[in-house]
Image (cartoon, rainbow, N blue to C red; front, side, top):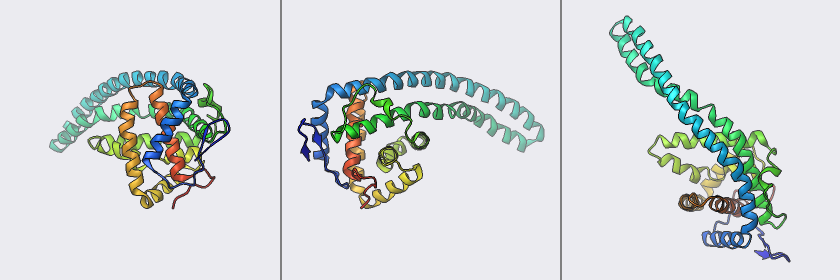
Length: 264
C-alpha cells in the first residue's frame, strides 16, 4: 500500500489477499477521508434506485393481488370443468385450483425483474467502476459517477443482475438460508463482469474456481458483508456507499487490478 502525492490511498494489489482487518481498516480510512465525494456519488445513485424501487414495489404489490385473484378465477373454472371427468378430474382440478394463484402471481412478478435490472444494474455498475478508479487514485467521485459508464457492457451487466436476483429469489424458498448463501457462493460474479468485463458465464466459472481455491476467504468475506449490510441498510446513502466501497476493495484484493482476474 502506498499514498500518492495528493494523499489518496493507492493499492498495489495482485489478488488473492483477503485480510479482513486490512480490508476494514482501508475501507474506513478511505471512506471517512473522502466521505464528501462518496455522498455525492451516492446521491446520484439514490436518485435513480429509490424511485425505481418504490414504483416496482407498488406495481409488484398490486400485481400480486391481481395475479392471485386472476389465478383463483382460472382455478375455479378449471376445477369445475375437470370435475366433469370424474374423480381423477376432480383431483386434478383441486391441484390446479391451489396452484393457479401462485402461477398468476409469478406471471405478473417475473416481467418486473428484467425491467428493474435494466434500469438499476447499469447505474450500480457505473458506480463500481468509478469507485475502483477512485481507489486507485485515478479520478474523483462525483454525482455523475453512477451514469458515466452506465452503457458499458450493458447486456452483460443486466443479464448478470437478473441471474443473481433469480438465484436469491430461489434461495428464499429454502427458509432464507439459500438467499444468504448467494453472497458467499457468488459474491464477486457481478464485479467480475463489471471490473474485468467478463461474460456472465465466464464470471460464474471464475468465481467457482476461485471459491474452490480460496473457500475460507470467500466464507469470511461473505459473512462479513452480510453482517455489515444489515447495519448499513439503516443508514441511507452512506451505508450503501460504504458497502460498495468495501465490495470493490475486496474484489481488488482477491482478483487483482489487472485485465485478467487472479484465480490462484
